[in-house]
Image 1 (tube, rainbow, N blue to C red):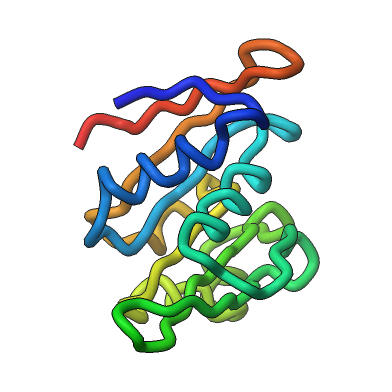
Image 2 (cartoon, rainbow, N blue to C red; image 1 turned 180 degrees about the horizontal axis):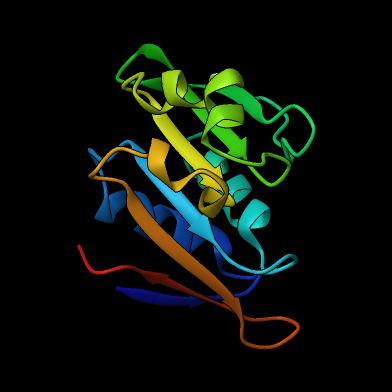
Length: 141
């Protein structure tokens, strides 16, 4: 599954993404620095009608946002593992607890601690096609 998007249609792609994965919980976002991982995750949060301010959790490692799902408050966790060195640091930061919480987890830089992810994690690859366009590819599942 692949999409191309720009800031003009990123929200439409985010909505289509959620329609493609209505029950999935853990998503690992791969891409170079500046590829648009955080920007796309912000669009995903907007598509879920998150009211919280969304931003990069580079220093906090884990941000928690809230949204309503069928009238019930639910959590979306946004993680950025860039600053972590290995699986041990990920465990100490509580990454595994969040990944197995049953809540939606959107994770940037998953290659920093690949051993902590559930088997059914969906891997997404974002690449810069041009200064305005990005390509999003879902790994074969």
